[in-house]
Image (cartoon, helix red, strand yellow):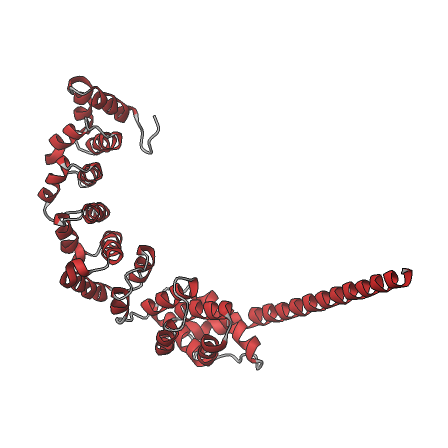
Length: 349
């Protein structure tokens, strides 16, 4: 019995020692590789910089080992990509990446594990390697939907201005608004105009998430070419669509026909009254101050607050608020006007 116990203890001790030796050896190997990468990066980056900026046509020699070459070059290109602002530099990054890394990323997309594929997709987008466009389109059909790899595949294609994404979004109605907007942020205005036309043509058949994301993004981007579409959505039968359109116009800080806002001052939906007040204040529409005076007595606190904040933005805002504190028939409007008069920017009294 004692011998058996000692044997078990001895075996466990040997396993522990073997594990410790393995971990120590593995850690030492990783440290050595990292040191080698860091050393090569420090040597090569200043030499590579003139080549990437176009000041030199002679490309410095890279390491012979393929893995080492890949890691060091990725660090060099990533470091340069974070500071470059001119098209010549971006083009040189793309050319170098496609020359040295294209085959590696192509293989990774087919046979790499999840983290390797995802990292490759991030770098393909950062280096704008659109020579891999068809590979990524093929990859899109093989990835699990709704995980980060799927989202990054779509983002990468969008950065390549891939027009087929419009049909893809339309045929996938369950895509989130957030993801659709991430795609739109990477698309040029001419493709967004095409998307606007498609949404108009499809009308009610347009996936809800796409329509809402598009209206939202129009305001965020501020493209004047898309403004008429947003304004047309003010007459939509859907309350949510109308609110999105008002919010988008608020981001535009502009409306070609301010009278389009008038019906929303008396809307049965408090959110519409709220955004009508916000937009009026943002655009300094002094001609609508009477509507704001009425909304100062609104039954919803947020609408009262926003109406008084909008009045404050008017050229004669202090006079109007003072009048409200003394003459408005609604005691809540009087209190809100007093609060607005004593409140500094940022909401502090």
